[in-house]
Structure formats: C-alpha cells, structure tokens
Image 1: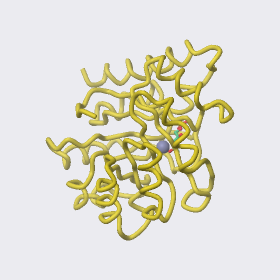
Image 2: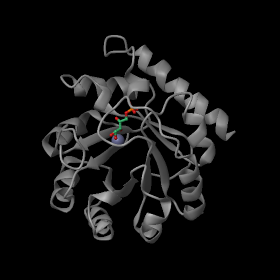
Image 3: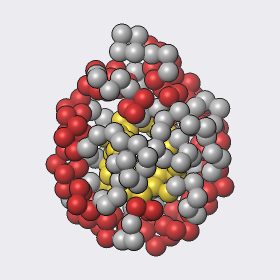
Amino acid sequence: MSFDRSIKIAPSILSADFANFGAEIRAIEAQGADWVHVDVMDGHFVPNLTFGPPAVKAFRPHVKTVMDVHLMITPVDPYIQAYADAGADILTTHIEAGPHTHRTLQAIRAAGMKAGVALNPGTPAEAIDHLLDLTDLVCVMTVNPGFGGQKFIDMTSKVRKLRSMIGDRPIHIEIDGGVDPKTAPLVAAAGADVLVAGSAVFKGGSVENPDVYGANIKAVREAAEAATA
Ligand code: DX5
Ligand code: ZN
C-alpha cells in the first residue's frame, strides 16, 4: 500500500446485502471503490452486532483493493492475530475501547497490518497526540458508531486540528458516518482523504443494477475533489 492524500472512497459493506457479500464487494470495486470498509461490531462497545474473523476471512478473496477493517469491539487485543490471519490490510481500533491503545497499535503493526485509531464524536483530537507515530490512519467518526444511515455530525474543526497535528507524516484521515455529496466537501476541505460511505453508495443500487453504485461513488468523489482543488 503506497501513501498519498488523494481522495479515496471506501464503501461500507454494512449497507450491502448481507446474504451476498462476495458479489457486493466485486460490484463496488468494479464501480470505482478505492477501498472496502468492513464494520465489525460486538453488541457491547456498540449496540449492534455484525460479523467476526471468519466472515472477514471469507470477504478477503473478493477484495482486490484494500480491506479496511474498523473494529467497534472491546477488548481488541485478543482478536488482532485473527484479523491479520483473515487478511485485513488496515485494522482500526477505537481510542475509547480500552486504556492501552498504545499497546494495541504496536500489536497491530507487529502482526503486519497498518494501524488505525478511531475517535468517537465526543473525543478530542488531542487524545491521540502521543499515538500518532504508531498510527497509519486516524478515523474521525461523524456519527456515534453502531449503525449506518445516521445524520452527519460536523467534526470539521477536529479534522482541521488533526491535519495540522499530523503535518507531513504519512497518516490518512478517514471520515466515517453520514458522508454524502453534501457533507464530503466539508471534510475534504478540512484535510480528510478517505471517505467511508455506506448508505450514500448503496442506496438505489444492487448487484443486478450496479451502475447506481458507480454513480453514487462518483457523486461523493467529485464533490470532495471540488473542495480540495
Ligand atoms: C458506523 C459505521 C460506518 C457506517 C457508515 O458505526 O462505522 O462505517 O457504516 O454508514 P453511513 O455512510 O450510512 O453513515
Ligand atoms: Zn466504519
């Protein structure tokens, strides 16, 4: 995985047809997705439950781009090796998931993955100041995690702050929650480069009608790129 700050669209398969993940992943990639975002929820850290390592391992052969795995679970450390074995390229943990995020990020990198750290809307940018040298991606939540299709919470000032804290270090800023063609320009202008979008990509489309995914991805991308030009 090479690093750059161009806009990358990462559809969240939380909004895909759960009975058809392989075909859904192939469809969004064929329609221009840059990364595939995989939301792992445990019904404990967040009030919803999705899937675990065996499912993520089953997704792997369908993902030709980057498999970006967002853990909304606690504890994290006992499962790091399982997600490495499942083939995650990036593994993101929440700063709120436990007291030892520093150790968790070291362990994610030691297992051969890129390490991400996510911040809930109530968590300030400064909380990860001492973690940035262990981090490849900062995920700024623009909803309270747990569900797709929620309303965007404006975290523009946090993104701007993180962008300046990061400086020229090769660290992505990812936005997760409520991203659509209206909200994407706000965060792109503030310095985000990876835009997760669930409902905004999958709405109106299907594996039988995948052109809609392509048009949805293009709409988010063009809105974001116009704001960075
Ligand atoms: C929220 C998840 C998101 C979610 C985004 O807990 O982490 O990735 O799927 O969905 P939308 O784009 O519909 O807000
Ligand atoms: Zn997510």
